[in-house]
Image (cartoon, rainbow, N blue to C red; front, top):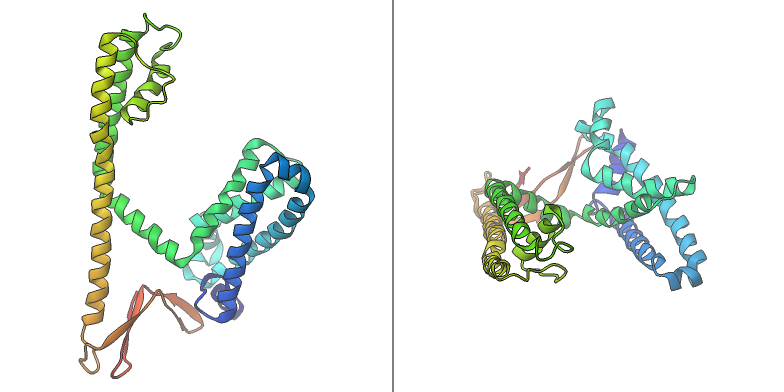
Amino acid sequence: MALQSKLYALLEDPQHSKASFYLNIFIYTLIIISILNLMLSTVVEYQTQYGKILETIRNIIMPIFIVEYFLRFYASGHLQQYRGFKGKLRYFFSFYALVDLLSIIPYILINIGFNSSFIRSLRLLRIFRLFRAKKYAIFIKLMKNILFNIKEEMVVLAFFTVVILALLSFSIFEIEHEAQPEVFTDIFQTLWWAVATLTTVGYGDMYPITPLGKLITGTISIIGIAFIAIPGGMFASEFISQLSEKKDNEISKDTELCPNCKSKNFFTLETPSLELDEEIHNLNSVAICKDCKQIKAFP
């Protein structure tokens, strides 16, 4: 258990020690190098001239990622929710564990003879490993809260969007099909035009030539400007609200009275970890009284 705790702190908590900090820097550096290596390997010129070098770099980095995955899998047993068979299964299907697994599976499959465009495309999932950073995790949590708070409005908006797209597709198909049978061939093809028009993208690959079709297109393009701005406005409003709430919570923590000396003279430590009974407990913040050194934890 002690080994799991130390390994967990080393891999998951960069603030635990210098060794943990530098190990995480090393891992993130390898991730960046791996992503750059993947990007360079798509350039035919570089692949022709430096293919062996790119392959050597990949064969050095990927085994390290594989070892790291199994070490994280073992160290996860440090946390109560990941102990036992059910706990390991829960960790196996957790977001970051799946990202880690899917980022190494293509390398393994390609090396044992399975090589397809789909398998190669899974290598792009290495990018998501960058979100393991604590600050990015806080940002992801903030995004989840925002989407949860506006989910009902987004569902209603999505419903009306589908209705509008369907009406547009059927209307323009009936109007333009006779004039341009080779362009507006069917409803599904016309649906692509409706999406491009409503979002005001307008690729120009499909456009109406009849007077009524042009009138509808112009009207929908103007409406689309306001319509597409709605979710952006809702998201921005909720984002500002969440940031304001987070700041207010931090201020309220700072201004609470010390339970020991009743002082307001606190300072906070963000995203700390406490080690109690050989277990590491991650907290949102810890407030420490400057006068009597009393510690108040916020889980």
